[in-house]
Length: 194
Image 1 (tube, rainbow, N blue to C red):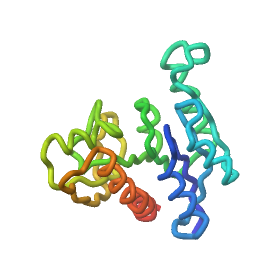
Image 2 (image 1 turned 60 degrees about the horizontal axis):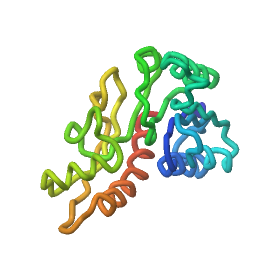
Image 3 (image 1 turned 135 degrees about the vertical axis):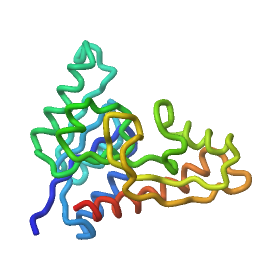
Image 4 (image 1 turned 180 degrees about the horizontal axis):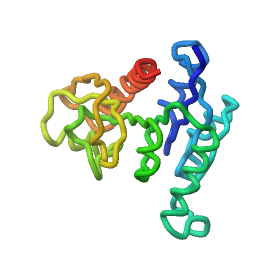
């Protein structure tokens, strides 16, 4: 069976990216990370890619000198994706919304730090998700891998895993437990799809 190509998009530290890099290297998934793309200047995910010898692209969406309009940014990201013709695109902590053309052209999945459909959609990312879970008095949270469609966190659910919300949890302590779950869940989902 041919090794599949994955392009990973990340905005931050890239710990889910690292889980995929490790899984590809140890044979847990029949894939290679063909490229890493970030929409943030200096994202540590780019360092992880560099350390693993993976081509990487930094398209800082806040760089107005380079991207005067949103279409310029979207085109740069799309060109970087197209250069690698991936079998799968994985959004691993990627904070920009992909344009319709990208999500209809490729198979795209995302990992989200809640049990969707709860605590998903515009404005629900990172710490904000965990703060909302705790504020709502939820007894469990978790992570979800889902297909990316034209909405925000509205695509079909592929796999979820539950994480208990413990008494006295803060957004930080809950985030740490959910992130541990994400590291395994993203690999599980990619294995299922490939």
